[in-house]
Length: 271
Image (cartoon, rainbow, N blue to C red; front, side, top):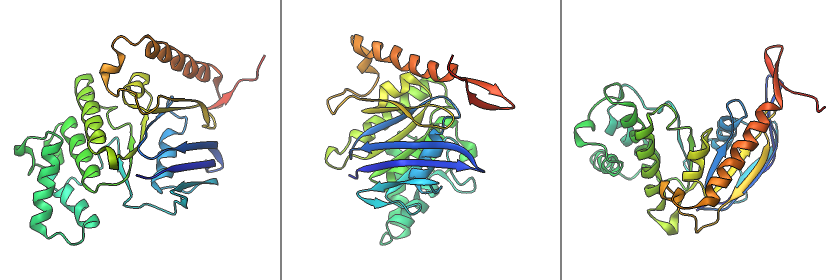
C-alpha cells in the first residue's frame, strides 16, 4: 500500500498548457476517481502517474520517491484494452507475469494466468482465444486480470468501461470493487478516470473534479473509509443524490465558462 503525492503539477504539449498547478494527497488504499469532461487532462494526469509522460513543472511522489518512469508498482488498464492481438488471453497474462515474477517457470505462469482469468469470471473456453475473438467486455476482463496478476500496489485505469454497454459496465464495476476489497491489509491505491458522475459515485472513496483549459482541481470530495462502494450505495441515501446534483452542477459551470475560439477552447471573460 503506497501513498501518492502530487505537488504543483503542470504539463504542456507543444507549448499548449494541459494541466496547471494540480495538487493531490492520496492515502494508500484509496479508490480515487478523476472526474471531468473530455479534454480536461484526466488521461494526461494518469499518464503522468504511470510515468509515460514527464511533467513540465511540479512532481509526483510515491512514498516520498519521485516517479522517474514506468514501474511494476503501477499497473495500467487502458480504454483500448492494450492486449497483444497475436497472443491468446492466457498468454497476455503470462507475459506480464514473466516480467514481475522471474522465478516462475512457463508452466507455473500458464497455470497462474488461468487462475487470474477465472478470477475475473472469464469462461475457460476463452483462455486460448485471441483478443479479436473476444467481446469488448471479455477483452476488458482480460486487461483487468493482467493488471491484477502482477499485483501492483497502485492501479491506474483510464476510462476502462467507456466503450461497453450499460449492463457489462455495471458488472465490471462490481468486479473491480470486489477485487479491490479482496485483501484489506494490502488494498491497492486506485486512480480511475471517468467523465460519468454516477460511475464516480459508485466506485470512489475520493473524487477529484478537474476543470478545463488548463486542467486543474476545482473540487474534491472524500467519503472516508466507511463508504459503501457499489450501486447499493445509492439506495435510500439522499445525501448521495444531493452530491450527484452538486457534481453535475460544478462540471456544467466549467463547461459553460468556455467557448470555441479559433478552433480551441478558451475561458470567457467574466462579465
